[in-house]
Length: 248
Length: 189
Image (cartoon, rainbow over all chains, first blue to last red; front, side, top):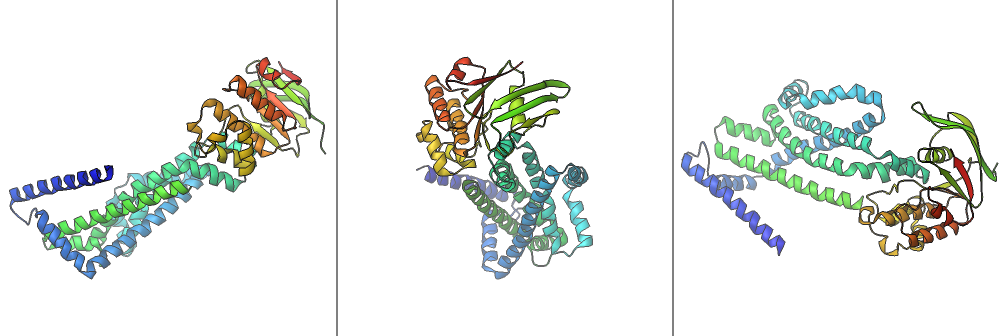
């Protein structure tokens, strides 16, 4: 059975990585510099038994995902505006270029000046998502075959039906790809923003505390938690995207 | 007010300094089949687009198209790549009419296939079925038989004639024009 084979292969690859990690950890010989997989996983298991860890992870997820959803909606809105109106494109494209080119840490520090620490990761995640969704969606709106639009009009489709049956279908693959890619960026940048802004109940705050107290095992355990949550999010998103593409 | 002819009066149309139609006048009867002929680049498709209201003439006027519902087979198939043959045909009508039109054109087995899964001739027949299912009151055909074998050309011509609406067709092929039996002719120089 191919799925069983794939599962075995994944398990084997995971084992190889764990073995390499264990070997390097033994070689280094200091838990303070590189903790072993066993001590990291044990620490993670302990963290998972604490309600506080779940609360902090949940709040981090909430902040970043709220920013992500706002970013996707804003990106689509800007894409429609700039694809439809040349003046909007001329007016707003410099902003997009600035957001794309500036280092994320500059935005985190600026956001810290203006916003509460709880809001910084949310805003940063919006800033990461908007340009990606905006660019991909606007480009595909403009690339939609005008002959299909003309055909739709000749066959009596209303403007709304043309949007639904032609534009949305034409844009969907690129839009969904941008949504998937930007999720990873939102997640990583959101956590980075937490580490700098230090909202009290967050994974970022726990990571910073671990670093401050030189608790390397904790640092590794929380990082593992971030990776696991990121993979889970991507899995949920990809599943949802497949459903959207199938239903559309 | 409905007319029994479509009048093209002194139509001029240019694109980027190149005049495609110059002071062109003609009458298209609103019954039977009218074949538009002309050399390549003479302006046959431009004339179609003017009649359909997809282009505006630089000068002159078109009388008799107001209030009409044209059903079009474009020069290209213009099928939605993400929709099945049935969904494409039902775009301007409904599933029952689409099913009937596809069946008459011999595409019963292909209704659930996407355009990329169809041959060139099959896609052309889907485009014809879409125009027939739409239920227009005048059929505009721009090289409708492209990619069809002789048997399917005959079937398609028969099905189109059975719609009993005026047919306006661009073709450069005499044999294809003859498939419609008797026809009027408009020549663009």
